[in-house]
Amino acid sequence: MEFAMASAIGVLVAAGVYLLLRARTFDVILGLTLLSYATNLLIFASGRLLVGKPPVLRGAVAATTRHYADPLPQALVLTAIVIAFAMTAVVVVVAMRNHADLRSDHVDGREPGQPVPPGDADGEQGPRA
Image (cartoon, rainbow, N blue to C red):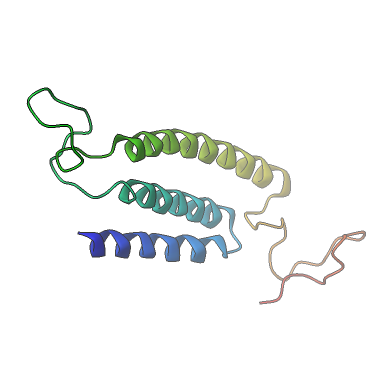
């Protein structure tokens, strides 16, 4: 079970980093989302992977760590899901506004091969392919 969880986290992180390094805003948003999923799985796995164990104490069962799952990582993951959803909504709105203003889906606002507008701060002659 631990190997499968570690593999899933590794694949999500690798895909998220790959998508973050792309030059399109949708890819960056998707990469951030995958990284947040990987972080949630990592937090969840930190509380021991137990199947079928309740996180809340019951009267008939002894209050030891063998009989219960840790509720703190579950609460942290629920909070992180809400925060990640809100931040994804904000990033999508900013990306839509950027696309409406610049007429480009590229993260720096220029398509590869376009000339640099005069007065551009970076002084490059466009992204290198």
